[in-house]
Length: 247
Ligand code: NDP
Image (cartoon, rainbow, N blue to C red; front, side):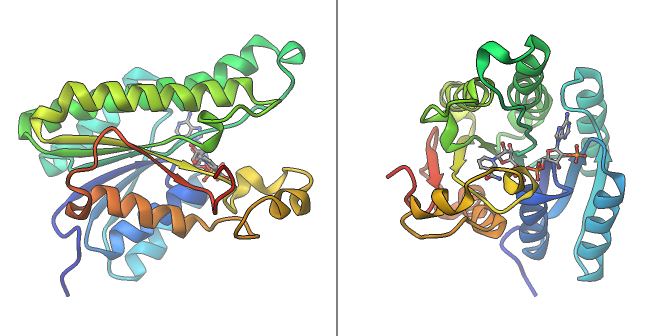
C-alpha cells in the first residue's frame, strides 16, 4: 500500500504523548519514516514506538533535551547519518509554567521560553542546513492561540508562542527560495496532559462554538496538510485549530 509520505523522513519533537504522539502515528501510517524526540518519559516513548511498529510502520525514538544545543546537534546528526535527509520537521515540544507575572520566579518564566522558543530554534538550526543542501524541506512549528491572543497567567507561554509565529514568518522569507516552506499551527484547547489540569472546563467549553475540546488527531491532520503537496503555496502562514474559540 502506498502512503502520502512514503520514503520521507519526518522529525517530530515531543512525540511521546499528546499532540506529538498523534502526529507521529499519523505520519507513520502514511509511510513516513518518523524519528521523534522525547526528553524524560522513556516508558511513554517506548510504548509509542511499539504501537507504531505493531502496525507495520517505521518509528524511532531519540532522547534529547531541546534546550541543549549539543544534544540537538547530536540528535539531528544521528538521524541524517542514517537517512541522509530530513524532509519534514515538526517542532511540537512545549511546556507551561503558569502564574501571574509578578508572582512568578524568573526561572519559571525563562524555562518556558527556553523549551518552547529556543528549543524550536535549536532544532531548526540543525535541520535547515540539511534541507538547504537538499533544496527541499518543510517545517511546521506548533504555536498556540495563546500566541495570537493574550491569556492572563501565561505571559511566559504567550510570549514564547508569539515568538514562534515571528520566527516562522521571518524564516519563511529567508529560505522560501530554497524550496523550503515554514508554517505554524495555533491550536486552541486540545485534549492532552497539558490541558488536563486547567480548571473551569465547562465554562471554557461554553465559549467554544463547537462545544468541545479538540482531539490531538485533529491537529495532526492539519500538520499533514501543511507537510504535503496539497498546501504547496502555503508559506509563512499560521493556521488556527480551535473549534472557532478565537473567531
Ligand atoms: P504534552 O504536555 O502532552 O507533551 C509535551 C511534549 O513535549 C512531551 O512529549 C515532552 O516530552 C516534550 N518536551 C517537553 N520539554 C521538552 C524538552 N526540554 N526537550 C524535548 N522535549 C520536551 O503537550 P501537548 O501535546 O498538549 O502540546 C504539544 C504542543 O502543542 C506544545 O508545544 C503546546 O504548547 C502546544 N499546544 C497545546 C495545546 C493544548 O491544548 N494541548 C494548545 C495549544 C498549543 P517528555 O514527556 O519526555 O518531557
